[in-house]
Length: 289
Image (cartoon, rainbow, N blue to C red; front, side, top):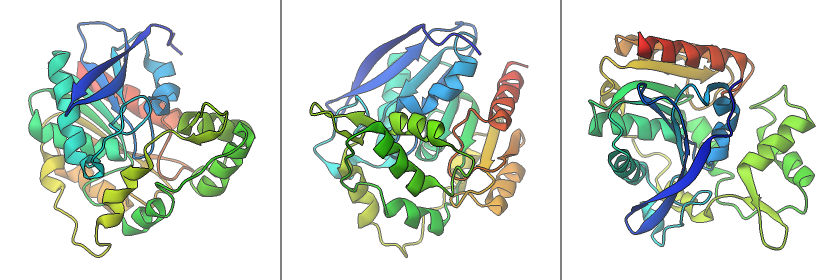
C-alpha cells in the first residue's frame, strides 16, 4: 500500500456554494483520478482505495453539495445529478485537468457518465462502481426507504450496529470492526457528541418527489459518450442496483469496456476488495499503455 499522508483539503465555489475536495499529490505526467461518491457518502468513502493508489497517482476526491464539508443548498431541488455534474465540471476547469480517470460509486458513476457527455476529450478512463444506464427499481426502493431519515446514535458502536442492520445483505462477511470503520466513513459527530449521518437530509426530497412508476430517462447515450476511453464496470455479485444483464450489455456497448464482478458484495463494493483493487489497477495500466 502507498502512503496516503500527502494531501491537502481545499474548496471551489459553484452556484454560490463552497464545495470541498481533497487533493492527493501525485505525478503530473499521468491523468488525475477524480473520485466521486455515492448518494449519502463523502470523500472518506474512497480512503480504502486511496490507500492502494496514493503517491502513484494524483487523486482528487470530491464531496457533492450537501455532503461532508461541502455546504448545504438552500434549494433541495438542486440535489440532482445534472447539477452535481455542473459543479464538478467547474472544478475540472479550475484545476485545469486535461486528462482524467473518473472513479464513481453509484451516484458518482451517473455523474461520471454526464461528464463524459459534457467533456468528451477529458476522460480517458472510468470506473463505474455498481452503476449503469439501467438502475433496478428494487434497489432504488431500498435506498428510498432510508435516505434522509433523521438518525442519531450515542456511540460509534451503536452507529455500527445500525449500519449492520441496514446493510447486512450488502456485506455479509463483515464483522464489528468492519462495521465500525464503515460507520466512521458514513457519519460525523455533532458538537454534542452524537453520531449522525454526514449529509443534508434534504437530499432525499428530489428522490421522493419522483413518481416511482415514471419511465426513467434513457442513459445509454451518456454511457456511450465514453467512446474509446478505457471503462471498467464493477458489479457487486449481490447488487440490487446493477443487474448482471445490464452489466453484460455495458461490456458490449463500448470497445474498451471490461466488466468485473466483485464476489460476496452487494451495492456497492467498497473498492478495497482484492477483486476491485486488481480490476482498477488493470484499468489504470490500460490507460497508460
